Amino acid sequence: MSTRHTMGKAGIVAVSVVAMLALAIVLMMKGLLPASADTAGVLDHVTITPSPATVVAGAQQQFTAQAFDGNNNALTNATFAWAVINGGGTISATGLLTAGTAAGTFANTIQVVATQGAIVKTATASVAVTPGALDHVAVTPLTATLPFGVTQQFAAQAFDANNNIIAGVTFIWSAVNGGGTISATGLFTAGTTAGTFANTVQASTTVSGVTRTGNASVIVVAPGALDHVVVAPVTATLAAGSTQQFTAQAFDASNNMITAATFTWSVVNSGGTINATGLFTAGATAGTFANTVQASTTVNSITKVGNASVIVTVPGPLDHVLVTPTSATLAPGAMQQFSAQAFDASNNAIPGATFTWSVVNGGGTISATGLFTAGSTAGTFANTAQASTTVNGVTKSGKASVTVASAQPPQVNEVSKQVLRDTFKDLLNRVGFERFTQVEAKFTDTQGRHLSVLSVAGTITALGQNSITIVPNGSTASQTYNVTAQTRFHPGEGNSLKEMARLAVGDRVVITTVNGDLALVTSVHQGQRVEDEDDDDEDADRDNRGPNRDRGAEASERHEGKGRGTAAVMPPGLAKDHSNKGNRHGDDDD
Image (cartoon, rainbow, N blue to C red; front, side, top):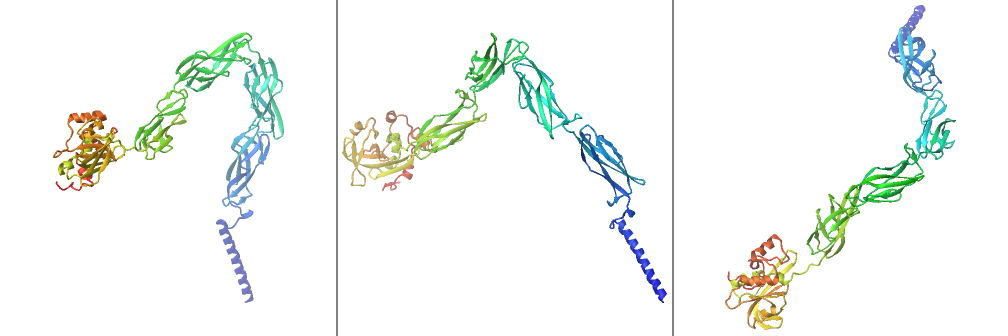
């Protein structure tokens, strides 16, 4: 029993070990259990470190390689072979790179080949070879031959020992052996002493603590005798009033610049003016002025001149805007058309300018075309109508002032006799004089003025030198009216004193006032109808008051809103329908 029991336990232990080994193999195959060096997988890929690498020309860089299986487990049983396949240097069997002398970027040039039995994998890395330490500086051109005062631009470049360019270097320029001067950017200006100045141009730089210089030579030659003068620009096209800076240079026969020359400037063929420094100002007259700009110089008793031409175009740049009229006086509601014109500094009109109109100081409104409408507030509105324009980027504006006058009541003689009679005639003829008391008509003329026309019938009780007193029909109280030079009579013509002489106490009349002023005295004889005056009488009335209109024209005027300064009127019949205020008998006898 004991022996069997012991053997049974041993068998169980053996089975458990086998099971655990099987589980471990399964887990390793699924990548859940890392393999040991003794259980490494199959070569899958290889890597290079560093990648990429930057190496100074001629310097060395150690590369290393590592092989891996498919589960990124490092393998130790692979062998490696190194090579440079795209330049940049050489590499040893152990991966030690010696960079070449030529700077540059060498993509994927380092190659390693990993081998595990029959399995081969490769990897590559890029290398950037940078210039070495500063070794020398080259200045170009190496030699320059320059006449007095002429300039030469020099350039410098830094290099390492392998002649690789070192970029980003700045230089300090100097003239160390005479011959002229040099700017901070390497622009050399020859002096006035002839000679050869060896290695006078020097460019110096310091890189990483190393300082190097480069040099160039200059030969300065004296110019020959003055031969000609050149003015630049040769031709200039200018708007009137604009300017152009001209320059001049003297040369010898070999076109060597003579720097000692000074110039006298003049305008010899009109077109504008020029100052002592050659600044030309175009005049106001358009045209082509050939060779008008002249520069003259004398060197060693030799005098030469140079010329340039000018084309002046009109107009010049926008200078100002003029609004016309510059001022206007308007009644409330009246209109004024303003206009604007753009000018250059020489008062040449600039065509084609468009304007934006605005009211900037009150007084009314203005349309996009400059039509101003006066408001209802009286007063002077200085510089209120503004016109603004922009020409070639220059904006200017002009202004005009507006005075809005107080509304004045119409004069009584602005309303024709025929119009005044139309306010009461039909009603009086229909009801008769005895039953007619008064009729009032209210309306507004084309200037916005309010007119009140009142016609009162009555009998004259007294006549003064310039007054008429009546007792109105249906009343016992008398009313007196003042006769003025504007008072008219029907029938009749001529001045008021002459017409008053025809009246007598006891005459029946219709007194018509306009806004309270006596405008018309109409005599009505017993049984007589009030009719229109005949042509001769009406013509005389027109002659006394200037141009007027007949009934149809005046009625049309009211409806169309047009006029020539006379009051707009009611058409016949309107007095009956709308203006019979106070007539106690106006509707009895229809």
